[in-house]
Length: 96
Image (cartoon, rainbow, N blue to C red; front, side, top):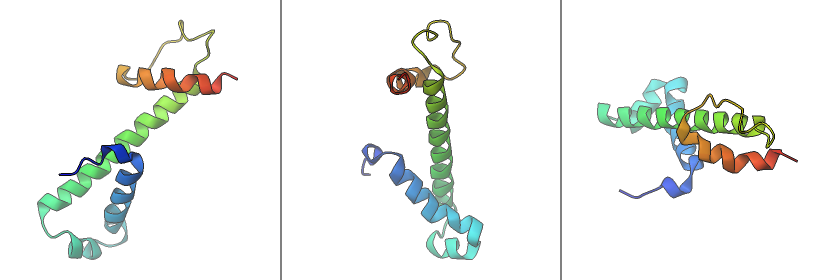
């Protein structure tokens, strides 16, 4: 299996859209390309992963824009600890 994680969110989003839009626009079209339950579950898993990653990015972006050097130490963080390093990296972009 090829590691495509370096390609970022764009690859996952494009793949998810290509396959999962068939659920919205017609199951028959999708079933012509995906013929078994395992492959269908893979598409659904990709879609769920895309949704989680996009939500995490939205939360990190909101938190980064809400941060300010004068308030950072006292501001409560209402997000998962795993996002803190991303927020700290992004926040200075919005201080000026």
